[in-house]
Length: 573
Ligand code: WT7
Image (cartoon, rainbow, N blue to C red; front, side):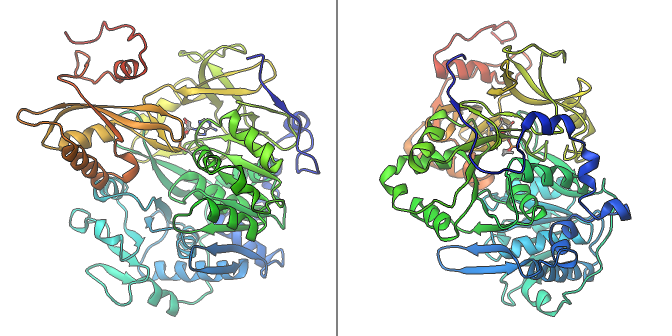
């Protein structure tokens, strides 16, 4: 621990010049004064993020969103964003959709996804962004659990929505339908063309639900995490201090809006700070990553370690072909950031990479590195001003520096999840050690207050920055006729962080072959999502189980890593 490498603060002027000072004087009440709700008592986050730039700041002509993919380039000003989201708000109202209704979005990254999201927020409904890779079963779980009334989707994806099993889902808005509509389907583009671009917003209390994102735990179905309009105090503050975002910044977050990072740091936090964002659609290779950074003169770039490692694998010659001198810093999230990545970007671009830690449940960045602060390589940094973090033992007692334990956050930060949809027990579990929120990650803090990530406490897998619950994958595997038992773990991988490995026992009469492996993999892909399919299988006669029948994943993990299996007292004979 004493050998950690330290990097000097970034040069230049920053929104936060002194971390300790800022923390000492910080009050969330002061942040409220930035927004109009402090005078009206009512709020709508879409207004604060978009309309306010037009109505109060005279910045309607500034570009809010640059969109590009391999074929198209488009741009939309704040006035455009206001108008298009008003239109979609009017479309929703026409179909009787309003406050508290769950409206999902299931489509590839595009400006229309953003208009839809903001329109949903403007009528006070709850937006449910869904990653486009989800397949039938994963979609159905989420739409039925939340009793969604509507979804925005595309002709390519709509077939995965099992309408007959979703009686509450009354309206399916199809983007690019070209008049080709089935039952319950509505032509998104035709409705938008007719709708007025002026709309009365639904002014809500700050505790009103804003969006709902499903996330995986180690057991059970995915949990619907509820966030509220009040979150914006946290989005604004982290955008300001962690992103160091300033008006005029050109900001690119590569996360998909199907995940919390894409929603909060792809659109809301940068707009609340008045900067332009970039959205790149489709898949892109290393040259396209660099072209996008160069062409738009990106100043702040937010991505994930897996992406950085893939770019590093393409070599230094490649990155040096591009002029990326506009970059002030890079941010990273989702998985541990290897010191090697930071060294590589220092060497190739002379730019620091700032690790940031947060979760779907925390709603906003929590532990981060800041431009004004020294970086200790391998550390996630220090808590955001206004946030208190600690390491606690399994009874909730705060541990001294250098001891490993549960990473915990003092409850009461503005973007804290407000509920787990229809599941108060799950919600309470996170807060069982009042006043601490227990994250599920283990970490330690050094004597200077820097936090170091150690791993997940539970069995949740992190593959290429995506969180996969082993239970969901196991459940899907045993639906396949060949598979009797399944235990799923994350296996360390140099590029993806972890890959999904399944230990399986076969039913009588089945033989494990290449073809069967492919069939099983496709079965999981089709049932859940491509990123949830095991990359590796190992066949066993029988899997280690507790007497109550639970698969002992820690034993599987120990086998995999060649480590001692530990206490087996609860294992069946
Ligand atoms: C889990 C949350 C919100 C970011 C996208 C993932 C892991 C997140 C880091 C980091 C090491 C990290 C944790 C966390 N994680 N950031 N900087 N270093 N691990 O959101 O799907 O809710 O996953 O991602 O294990 O608990 P998520």
